[in-house]
Image (cartoon, rainbow, N blue to C red; front, top):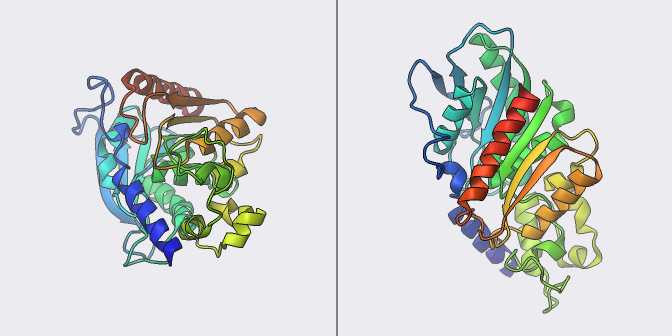
Length: 320
């Protein structure tokens, strides 16, 4: 019981902390767009499945009639328990203004109404939504032949899972992934202190009680994880399906990732593993650490500007 209380408290805190700078622009309007018909059109609440949340919004650039387009899927934050695609409207409009087809996709949120939802089921919904997004774009005259996956916080995690775990089954090549502050893997030694101190010297819970972390990892993965599994390391097989960093290989797409060094909501140490995996496999990437910020990336405006510059640079280089 205490494990589930622990997990619930964490997810509530994660959701409450999910509003970070990718939802607004601290750069003086450089990444906002005065939206009208000369920029593009928006089609909202298009279905991709039977679930109530299985809806997406499609942003189509005004320059119709090209032979092909790049798609950028941007997934919303909210701690896997809240949020909505409409909250990323400014980012999606900016992407559309750059000439990309942009899509915001909702997914079934974990909560009382959907207690069986978890990171894996949400990632499966995103995977299953992509053919519907491509078909609708083509029906409207925008054929897609390449794509990028992106998002913030929880959405960043789901984007990484699609780009690193599911890209091999994608109907079009995944050329890029970018985002900020999404949990990338679930090694116990990274999470034991909830990211409050990324340099914590202890690799195990000093109290010897793993029930809280077992409850958290169960809530995230949807798979049975016991304290004994955490103690003997066998839990890693159970969390692999939600651990994007564990799927990185030499074929993974170029990547831009941003993390706060003082993140007390998700494990900053896990992001170091992501950087090491990308580096070890020779994947072109940018790993940007906001040295004075937590989960909200709130104290490093210059670094945020650099992050957006790198996003724009990678979009032009790899998505075209």
